[in-house]
Image (cartoon, rainbow, N blue to C red; front, side, top):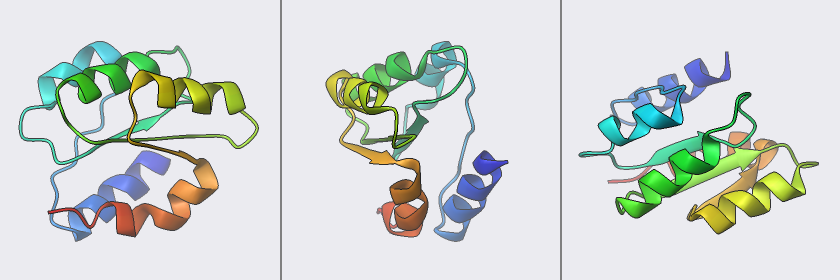
Length: 101
């Protein structure tokens, strides 16, 4: 599972990582968060709400999605993500993205 890869990378960089699968649950995990990563392609929607909640709380947001999903990527930008990447870009840059204080 891709979330396991992200969680393992976060732990290597000294971060606690919480995987949240419902947008409604994101707000409860924002206090003290260094970064929120959102998969824009999660089935069932809610990704844009998660981006908006995190951005509204002042937490940096990196969102990613499939390269062919231009509308979803733009919607992530419009919702307030600081960076929106294709999945391949996200995978390639994951370690650098997690190198935050």
